[in-house]
Length: 241
Image 1 (tube, helix red, strand yellow):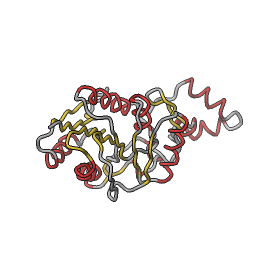
Image 2 (tube, one colour):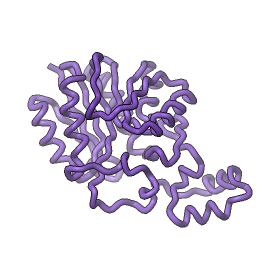
Image 3 (cartoon, helix red, strand yellow):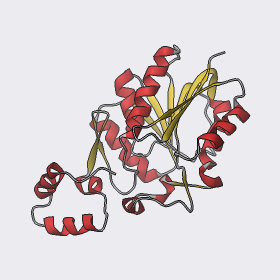
Image 4 (cartoon, helix red, strand yellow):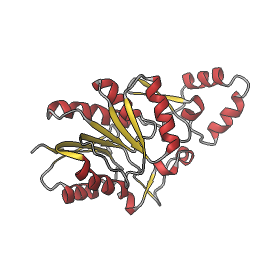
């Protein structure tokens, strides 16, 4: 989570002139400052956040950048679905940067409401779908699937601030692999043969996710990348037959 800066503290004073000390106490109890301020900057776009959505991390900005770069490098059609969209930050950034309409899905009705507001604020063209990915069916097919799904293992230690974020957006069964398996299986039905699948991943899950990918896409090109802290963070699957 981002460190609290003097600029953030000054902003809190402006937002809560009568309750500033109370908000400082909340911060001392590890309540995320992003929820108190009410928004974050993500890829240059203002994304409103509350405790119905995961707080966008700066690492996810690199996922967006890589997706844009890989689409261009491999000349992939720009029809995109964002799965487990949360605040909508990925879909909004991609929609704005590529100037296209994007579909985005999330199981949480409350998260979808936040995402819709964010799309409106940023004048992004995103079609939000409130549905469980396990049950999702579509007559439409896509060439790009991007997802930052829940991947925290049930017994995994997390930062103190994280306890205030929605558990549905964080934790996954099957040792953190649950949603990667579900999404890869579902992708066989909703993607064209020439496609790009982009995942943000838990830093300890790379090898296990690669094994899952090979189960569904044995001939795919697999690219893995680390984040700025040298943790395994991104996996890209390219099917360009």
